[in-house]
Length: 259
Image 1: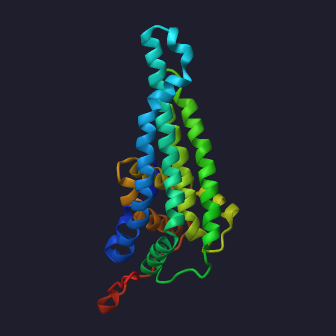
Image 2 (image 1 turned 120 degrees about the horizontal axis):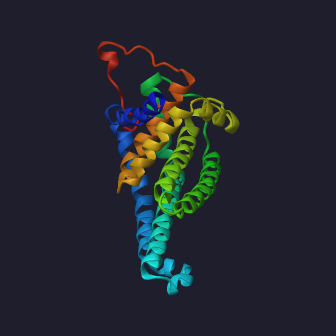
Image 3 (image 1 turned 60 degrees about the horizontal axis):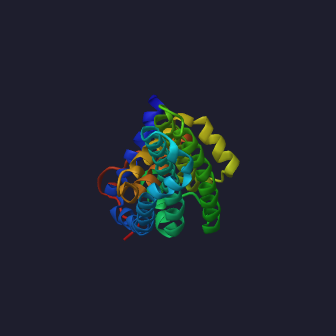
């Protein structure tokens, strides 16, 4: 539990990047806002049409007692909305990171520079980011399907589907968000996944905390820059990279790389 909370704390530390490089962090709100408007409209539309879809999916329940027919349709509606909500959180991350690649690259560099004083030489690359995003969405579809199936279990389905969905999507978000900082250090996909498994609790803590924030209205837009910064700090912690001693006097002044 201590490692889990430490991982969640790295997201909070990512918020501290607003103090160090406010210009870069403010720019990071723009891609999230653009993608958030599109995804928000799609989610509202899904919620509007979902009751009609559930009725179409369950014609066999028309002859049931009203209580049981209603219970089934409510359970199916809640499970379906929750599954799509998890999928949207994963897809939002993938699309936003791709759309805002230059901006989030700047946040990553600013975090590296303000924390360690240097930026790794290996470039992440736009097309590598696109490939990682596509894989993230595909894995997110599988997680959403599993959460939906678990949500249909009588009595415990809602809680079980929510918990499993949070944990699995949290893991996916941690994997995707940390890929930039880890790939810049020369770690391929297999090495990155091995590092995540070695630091499983801390990765889950960071990913689940990010996912919970994403589920809050407008939370995904507001927290995205901090999630990029926090994922960089996660890489530092997992690899044992310690920041240098803080300089004293005029040298301690931070310069915002976004300016």
